[in-house]
Image (cartoon, rainbow, N blue to C red):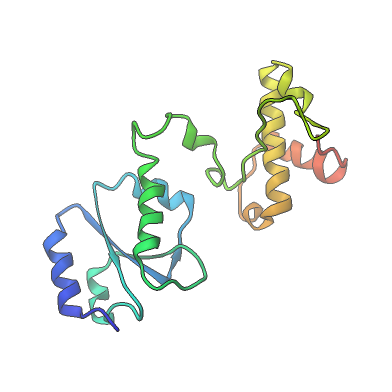
Length: 183
């Protein structure tokens, strides 16, 4: 089952405006990353095309501005990937979340987030790190940054490649890698 070119193209043309950006969800597309989500959140009008089963007739590719993939696996259609894309974009729109929230989350700076804690202070013999209970905002900020680097190093080291580091991040990585300081 392949979506017909004339039907898909007619649907695109019906929706398209002068400031539209047409995206086709496709396993052949460029993998979706947070940086691209930020860029797409600035676009005034998105048209998202979702194939199903075998996809869409290749003759409509000239109507497409960009193909996006959400990962290296296959689904029955592009509807779920489109929902993922829409959710990732919508949460960046003004008024949807706290304004600062998207700036500190995983992937925003090609880093995973630091660990989060809540009450009680001790659970199953494990305590919330003392620095987080200290009330010292600068020490908490540095701890979070260091833990973010450590989390990324341990769980997604690929994110650390081809990334620019500020002086503070370099110093924290040095503490982690060469001094074995994980706190």
